[in-house]
Length: 118
Image (tube, rainbow, N blue to C red; front, side, top):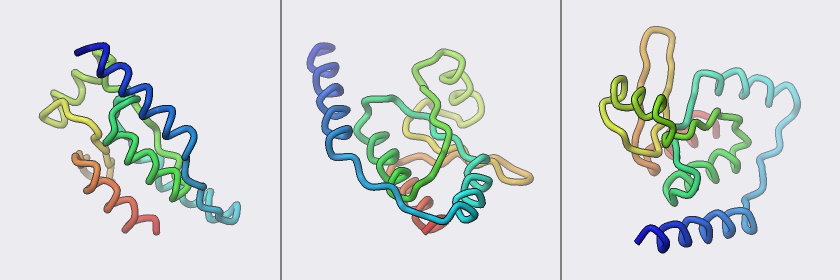
């Protein structure tokens, strides 16, 4: 089972590399403003997870520079468990002025990114 998962994960990564979406082009000043807004966002993910790939592709289409964090790392996994309540990826950490919101589900994350940065 491990071998099948590993192989499928590598196929997903290869196809994502070959068929990567085009980045959205913005002026330099617009991109700086977007980069400032995305500093408060972090995506907890697994590299070969198909749902994480879906979110990363949406980030690329929008031209967003959101920090990605490997949730396989024990420290990050513990942080997900203690602060977010469960270890599930993809998970978008949204740090607002007075609170932190943890957004799960790839479709919900993509919808949030499209609404906020479209």
